[in-house]
Length: 66
Image (cartoon, rainbow, N blue to C red):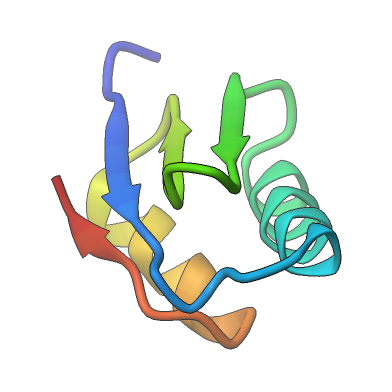
């Protein structure tokens, strides 16, 4: 997949949050490259940005496009 979505997720505040976001994205986009960095609150996923944002919101977080 050529799409790459990058978000800042400021309400991702701990290791559990990272795991929740990563699991949600891995479930929604099997095989897609997913990067979640708690220190920068940055999430990158090789997927459609609108769909990825929806998955992050469904997981309980607020993605802001970068």
